[in-house]
Length: 251
Image 1 (cartoon, one colour):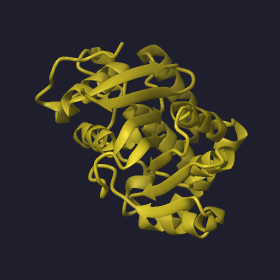
Image 2 (cartoon, helix red, strand yellow):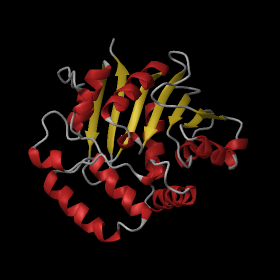
Image 3 (tube, rainbow, N blue to C red):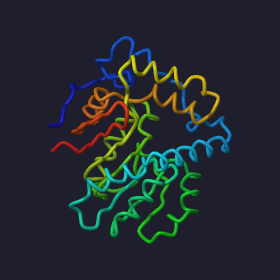
Image 4 (cartoon, helix red, strand yellow):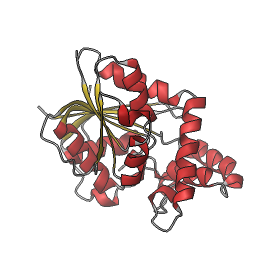
């Protein structure tokens, strides 16, 4: 069953732990941005972080497991049209194109340089791939243009107001929006995780991982965002793996 949280009018001030977040959980968040989101960070540093994310994703089969989630959502569609938002390195779209013989994937990111890098790879020449620079909060596409939109491992970058816009826009241009992201751990486990990461925070990849952990949304927060955006959401979470949100427009 889809859980509909009560309407929140001050969504911009909602804690990452949701409206019912504990005092401790409210302390375990930050307004600090990841290096990937900052204009004052050298592009070489950003490329290193993206490369590390791709390597880790391959090592732990994250790309494959995320592709499995995507393909499960379009299993009943003969020739599915899929929009990937915030594609980053493009590995998820690559896996989807490899594993589905007729899927057409629009690979997009808000960062034009990321899109250019993906276009320069094998994806750029793939006959079923389209490359576009797209802001996920204001998608330049008609209503119902895609069978599925997917936003993987980037949702936590967005503050609540923008996150709600992504839910509204994703469900406008696609029949369903699939969000795959980091889970928000229970507070005690979260503290232990942060303590383990802290000694390596000098490494940009770990720095961004630590900040990402503090900016991740809880299931309660995701449901509140869905209610604010006027969409129905279903959330499943594993504190040691991934969090998955499925969103559709209210009927």
